[in-house]
Length: 273
Image (cartoon, rainbow, N blue to C red; front, side, top):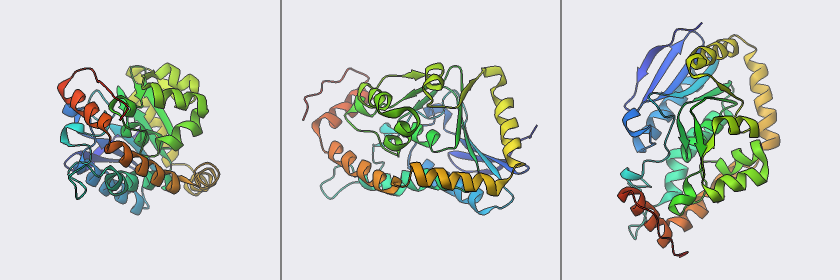
């Protein structure tokens, strides 16, 4: 069983190593690992490390605390400091610069990637989870496309990853109703690969990482290239479309209301404008 030790401590992410396996661990537990601008920098730096180190042959994406990721850090501003000339948040640029490089990098990494999910896995956090090759969750995990609840649309590749896994009907349900999908249902739908009991989760994930790290790395990479070509060939175009539509939403009254209601912890009052 691998014994992971911290190799690099970034501000919001830990990179751990155990032999040929690495673990990228989100580390903002007090904010339920909400994804902010610094986390984008740290995740990309961790990704570059696992990409460039030939001794690393398998990667886990995990998180500290009781949540995997609660989505983008709205309290830090949806675009987290990136604005257009008129002062409106530039979500399109934010997606292209801060989220897409991490998500596409891990999706195309020529090494197996496993997501290990506990607690909430929400919004762009769900995109991060689903860019992996294999996704496993604890019994208390849940998955949520929360964008509609603040007047936005799915982004970060979720409009590609989710229908690829569960089909149009269920993807539409997640996108338009914005309701939680618990771990058992997610496994039944095929959104994730399986559910593992909480007290066995870390052990099982570490064992899987060890198995993959000692396996035929080039074979895994070849299979990943095949699947990416067939299923995610148009991914870059889809990411661009997501970002463009998200920017339209960012300039709507409903988005302003959605974010304000979230911050004020009250019900939304959408007007459709």
